[in-house]
Amino acid sequence: MLKLTYSRRLQRMRILISSNRFDASAPVSAINLGSHFLRGTQQIPVSKLQLGRRVRGLTAFNHIGSRTSESCKVRGLHQLLGIDARYRERHQLEQQAEAAVLSLCAMDGLGREFWLAPAASFAWRALKSAALSDQAMLVEISGFRSVEAQAALILRKLRRSQTIEQILRVSAAPGFSEHHTGRAIDFADVSELNDKKFLTEAFEMTKSYQWLVQNARRFGFTQSYARDNRHGIAYEPWHWLYRPGF
Ligand SMILES: [Zn+2]
Image (cartoon, rainbow, N blue to C red; front, side, top):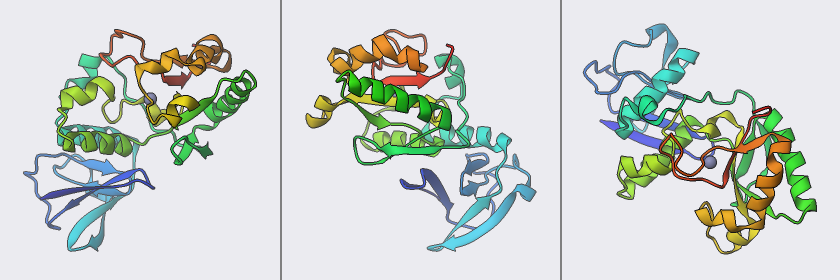
């Protein structure tokens, strides 16, 4: 019996299993979930696992992380969410490593903490101040997002009865979102925030978008998902990635 919970503050998913007995026939493989670990097959050496404390009668495994476990986490989450094992090839996307160091930049347009990798944070500050001096009223909606946060986002959509195919047209699978790198930003125009309607194609009609098209490259930011892109991801005029020299 699996139970998925998600900590919004820690951006970490927690998987709990209803027994502390290891079940080798479980359909999931080894899943590193940041602060917790679920082991379903023998893929991760036991030396990397530490039996965690009991939480409300369930048992969690704390982990001592490694880079290989990052891929295990992604594979495990894909299996849990029903994402095709050929996702990478089908969408021609590369796995994105989570940023190791992050800076808290500000609160975003929705009052949440807005984190970026340090280099992206410097570039964003310069971009933002230039935009403001040109009266382009940019607002940030999303910066760094952990692999688990991406999984939680998809899980919420599944619970609202969207199919995984519908969801993956607008959201990258966990492990493949540029937001994991701490270098991607979703922008809105302040007017959209007032109307509570943002992250839609209508962003391209705003002064903020026009300003980004003309100026963002100077600061190292480029738009990732054009119309009819080869990744099968919807057109996202609001999504910009810091990749200097690109
Ligand atoms: Zn985005």
